[in-house]
Length: 212
Ligand code: BEZ
Image (tube, rainbow, N blue to C red; front, side):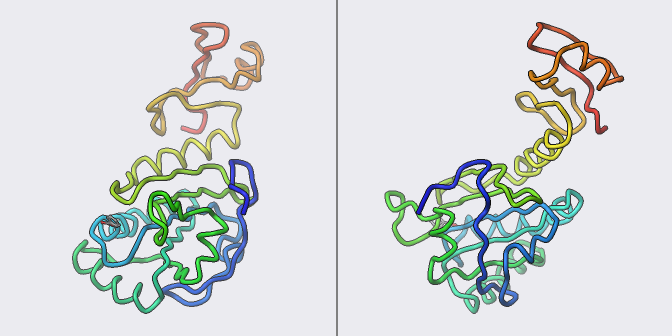
């Protein structure tokens, strides 16, 4: 198994899930995707994460991002646990959870890190673009729940920078100034970004968010 890196094609798979059999590429269609693993059903941090993910679904939908969770528990377990998530997190789980009992998907995506735990998946996140290339990989340990505001923030950056010659600075949030890509001259930038280009250094140029 080769380690997946940014720019690699996301491995396709067909797997059981809480809502039946799912093929990744068919499920994603032309959308972006977020595939995220959690260690195990009926665990506290995972319960809060999946409840939060469900509450954020409308934000992922707005960004044309399809959600897909995964653990190595079976689909009956997932469906029992979903009842608890809905009850305790005051929500309704509204995306599939892959039941990766044979670890086929976890192995393809290198989601089991044996020195952390040789049985359960870590908290991996893969953001997949419409062309099926991997645009972001994050790995969190079991003890740390993920920040879903950060996942939306990074998706905003990935989507903006995929289509415009810009990059996003530290702590950037949607709508704030962006930096002009180092690959273009300031002169070219002034044509491309009619809202204005502020040249702080020849390599550090800011412009208002061109999509705002
Ligand atoms: C949790 O989701 O709470 C959890 C899962 C595995 C290990 C530690 C915490």
